[in-house]
Length: 446
Image 1 (cartoon, helix red, strand yellow):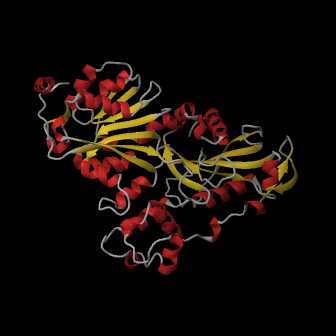
Image 2 (image 1 turned 180 degrees about the horizontal axis):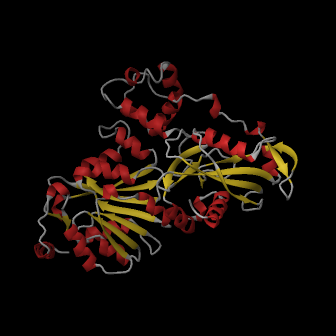
Image 3 (image 1 turned 60 degrees about the horizontal axis):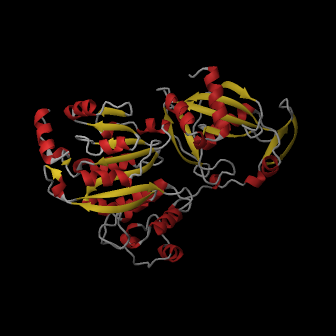
């Protein structure tokens, strides 16, 4: 829209822009087109637009053939957009983006998020929509220039800080361009900037504990002028050895360390329990025939290497809202690393019974105990990895103590989201879980 059109429309729908709420309307069509072009939208994309305003970006998003969900807090603007864009591929949600349930996006095959984030809540929105793990493949945000410089900063600069590292741990951040305040009505007090975020490949950084990383980074940047040795001595008492091992000067300050060095430092600080170190070569599983009768036992490597029939258990844990907890398998799993799986799952060891194995896996992987109910038994097949599987369900609201050597992360999901997610992105899941989910649906959801 041109300036005159924006002014007339705002008068017609009786909206007086409130700068403190981020109601600054873009009137540069060339810039709007450039923004959407940077998202490289296709008809296969599902776009979530935060704060669409009068639809400056929305029109170009729809022109790409993508499906668009726009989240608008102002009811008057939401009603206007609903009238302006009646297309089947457009949905307007009158809501606060901070309250949006990101889990519903897992049911979409490819999701991209665009938005002009209101300055007064930009950090909250940024952290919410970049929470890891995420169903989103690309983020394109207009932020206050100062914020954009912070999340895209490099080591050794004044903008480099805890927020930089927390965002960059999972995402590559590109500072695309500065945007003058003059392209908005009303004109904001500061310039803006566009940043583009894309997910890092799963194995780009060494294995790490994100919680330990964030804790160490926040402590390290709590007093920027102090040397790290004075801030992290409790976490790393042998500081000289830690600095030498990671490769920085012992007198360094927080902003001097790279992302990779912070990851290495957090790994040194993390206390590893002996229970986390599992030797796959020492495990032995029962080997069974076509009728699930035990005919012997063999080492894990032999069972998997020769596709021998063996036994496994899967446990699906539901909270009192009826949501199911799913785990994302760690990179160290010999089968299906990085894929989503049942709440707890594992093999039945030689000489062990199914029920005993299910209780053990629940304790080892989630750190809890619960009453288990048998749901269904799945026959060994290629889809189950030649595993006879007993599927169990349990009730527990958490919190859980995840076995970090086994599980990267986990979260509760509505069951309807999981069913749609499997349809939209089957490659996200371990095949055995998909078979278990189908069996659960046949048996009837709890």
